Image 1 (tube, rainbow, N blue to C red):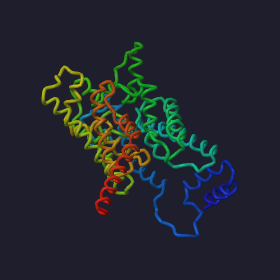
Image 2 (cartoon, rainbow, N blue to C red):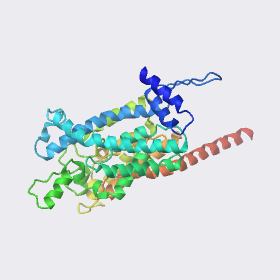
Image 3 (cartoon, rainbow, N blue to C red):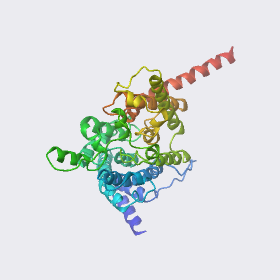
Image 4 (cartoon, one colour):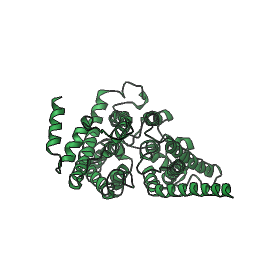
Length: 407
């Protein structure tokens, strides 16, 4: 009660000043607002922007915790200290050593993401004199989950600053941005620092550093970070079985590996009506459709094994959903309510094209066989256009029905 009283006193003291948004944000983050309305009719609901963001964060927390265990697990497997055959339920996965390595590598990413992003949000709130918006609560959690585990913290800080300022604040802040801020941050990293965002080594802790030491003449064993997509892109045999792919015993971005937990998060978001099931389902259907087309091309013999596209084209169409980040993108990125289509029919079109383009980019870009973030950013740009034509189509149909009735 003392903390709440002190915060309320500070809020009242700085009311009307430039620092008011900062104290208001801290007060409402910890407690419900103490202002109530007295007149007129009002819709009483329990959800608001902050609670919506917190719901998404709750859906992401299992992926974060699992990603910490997996980061340590992949590190110890690469060193030969753990036998991969132990599997998801083996005692070697759920060990303190794996968690310690994961926390040591992932937690700084979370701290930098939230620290830099919220600092910029507070600065813009103070400068513009508006309340601190809660939109970055989810972005700050998503960013550490979609980057390599060993990415330098200064790179992440620069990318977060770019994504928040250029990707959101210049458009007016939360609710006004046309691009998903988290994917804008990843796109900046991909184009500004490509060697840290692609290749085999970046997905396993210590692999890049050890490879550099070996290149400099150190007598060390290399750490392999070969991903499934990388193996397929190079027409190599995949060392992981389907259950490894599903449970997440594979290298990859921190939050994208466990498809089981992503599906669990999807069901949670759909049940709470925070995530759009239309976008999620249509994205997966689009990915399956593109996968079927490529499988048909292989079956028809139009592409031979000598082609650099053969490996990813020959992937069974359904397997595209359990490798890479298509499922994570469909659940947590494509469903962003600000940058996605708003009409029901538009959501079906928007999601289908995201899945369709994701697999197309994955196959035709073997150097970086993952295209979901590019596909979502592209469709973010076209989402208003899709909604415009859906609405215009509805208007035309209603006008035709009106003419028939008046005739």
